[in-house]
Every structure is written in structure tokens, then in C-alpha cells.
Length: 216
Image (cartoon, rainbow, N blue to C red; front, side):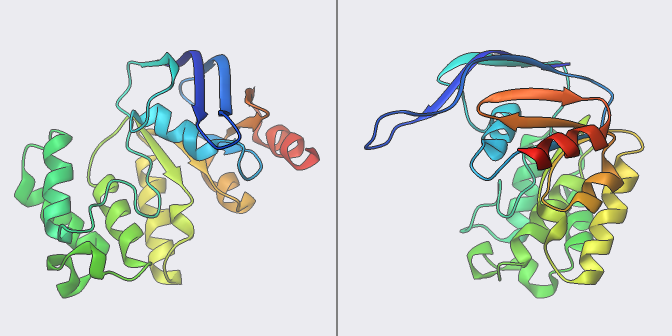
């Protein structure tokens, strides 16, 4: 169960508060792999950060009895001054991983960063950071994985690897995904939430959700 209870979220600006959500209440259905659809700037990534607790609403609350991942995006949760190894151990520690040595080894193997794994992340190329973030996420068993475009990053071989890993995870967990690639959403998701003008609409049928989104 994931509930948004009377959520208001805005960002201050020179033109006044820019509202993303205003008094929004919504329950995200359990047991679905859900595509989040919406135009650029609609608030998809903000919604993810609210769900993960990495950002807080100005008013209202998010209620859940599930273990949600952090939003796996280009650099989410990765600290530039820390090495890949240090990031992995820190992420494992705050997520309650029992065997940090084994977890770090799995992250190292999956990310395929070679010697860079032991260097500060701020020395990484733009493609290396999401590889580390994705590897850290896949090493932990969450109830729901929040995936933000990350499977489109990297070379073809690594993209195939991320697809296989996430497909395996989705056999025992659920996925909530942001992507502009409809074929990717069709592979992972069975339903959709369309975000438009601060409101959420759930579609039990993914194709109906895509049709609504494309008509906006």
C-alpha cells in the first residue's frame, strides 16, 4: 500500500511558489508494475522523490507499509567525494544489509567499473555513475523498485544487463518506472499512472494509459 495523503508540494521562485501538487490524495494500487507517464515538467521525478522519502511535501504525508528503493536515476544517492566502494558500503549500511563485504563484492561485479570502483565518483564519466547506482539498487531486495530512465544509460551490453537484472527482480517485487521509451515500459509494466496538471489517474491497462498520455 502506498498512499498520498493531502499532498502539497511546491518550489519557491521569483514568480512565487510553483506548485507541482496541491491537496493531492491518491492510493497507488499494490501488486502492479506501473509506468508513470506525463509531459516534461509534470512532476514525475518529484513524485518519485516523495515516494522514496528523499524529499518531503510542504503539506500532507506519504504512507506505505512497503520497502521502497531510492529513485534509481542518473546520480541519485551517489556521493561524488566517496569512492564507488565507499558508496556501496554506505548505501548497504543505511539499508540494513547484513553482510557488507558480500554486498560490496556484488556491486563491484555488476557495475563493471574496474579500477574506477576504488576512485572518487566525481572522477567518473557520465555513464559510470548510473551503473554504480543501478548496481547498488539491484544488490538489495526491495518490495518496490523506483526506476527513473536509468535502463537507457550505458552501452548496449550494459543496457541488456540492466534489463535482465530488473526483469529478474520483477518476478518477486514490483516496479514503478519512468521512461520515455514505450517499448521499455511495455516490457516491464502492466499498468500506468498518468500525471497531468497535478492529478494522477490510474489505468489498469497499460495501453489505455499510454493512449491517454499520447493524447495530452
